[in-house]
Length: 139
Image 1 (cartoon, one colour):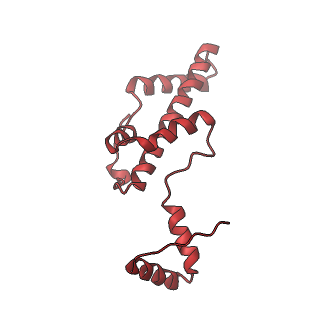
Image 2 (cartoon, rainbow, N blue to C red):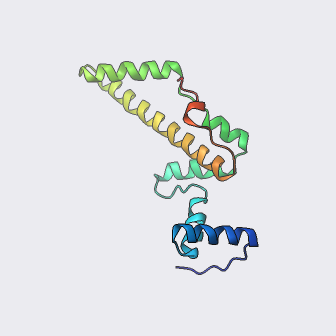
Image 3 (cartoon, rainbow, N blue to C red):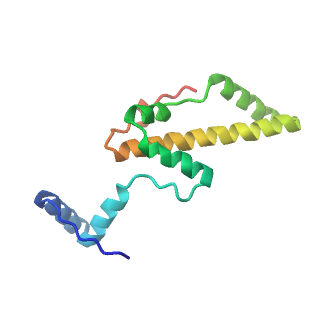
């Protein structure tokens, strides 16, 4: 553990003190929880190739992050992926199609991770995060 001394504005200190009393938590624990919950998202537990890609997102402007956050998989990609999944359930995939299905899944996973990371950075920067009802549902 490292020790850090902070000078807080009086209203913030009073707010932390009130919350600590209401929740029966030590003031230090509440302050640590507040700092931890408001740090930018960490990429340390991801594969190395994803760490570099997602770390660079910290440097992007809000409009660039929003573009990533709102990105969608193309309808053609979704249709092809669905076709391959159905064919796989019937054990009718060729080796080439199986590899395509695997790659397609990885591509979608990477996109979803990038989208989630973009939203986390936006939230950290104070940008309002939409509710699930406000997010687009189309592919």
